[in-house]
Length: 329
Image (cartoon, rainbow, N blue to C red; front, side, top):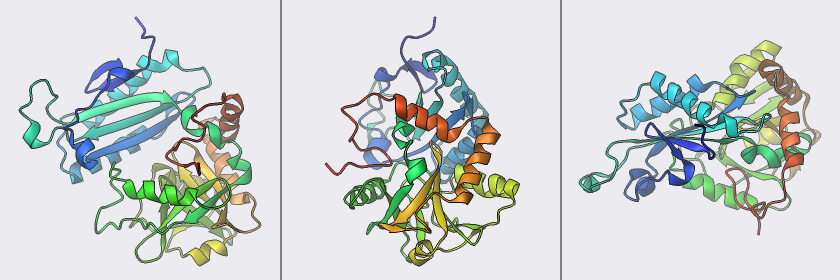
């Protein structure tokens, strides 16, 4: 019998999301000791799921979190979770999977009866529109990125290529960016060397003289969307794409800029610290890339998000913090 509520895959058991609880003694709560991935679908079909899971397992290996579940089994569990929830999704909605794996209980708490022993594997499935429905207008106006005083943590200290939950520095950067004048301010982090690294959940690109440029992969999370733009979209359109160090000056003098991220795919960046990039409008290279992405997935990416935006009800949580936006209130 189909469930009337969304189900979470909690260590292999499908349970109502309101019942999915991690112990207060879990290392994820104590130390942010958890790796995760977030995926999305197009026409209900998961996009690059294997790439996300491969990166997840790379993080597990490096952090020495033992997990008996194989990558193939993890992928099967993801699809099982989607299948269990699909009847609750609107026909035009998409599945956003959040896959979390924690180390589990800290050693001193292992003897407490009734608590799960070993890593916790949690796969949550909820409508993508929750994340992106407020972004519809941004595809026309672009966003303003703000270079914050909060710097990125270099790979020599904590490798950002491991997608983990220890991200307080992201939070602090978002809060600082939200204090900048105007709307649609997103944080952009510099490395300790003064070069641009990434946003707080997105990868950064500029375009100069027809060449797409993104920061070197040294001190950034090498996003699945970043890779797709570089290796597949740019190549298919014959647009040169390179990795190199980018200074703020390079952004101010660029022709256009954009960011990539799994939920929204791509967003145009039309200003930096309130100063226009290029003519301050959405760039032609951005438009070519996202249109090709839409063609490849048979989904009008911009149209889909703008439709969800138009349909969303007024919410008391409209100004609540999100992974991408913080209210000034």
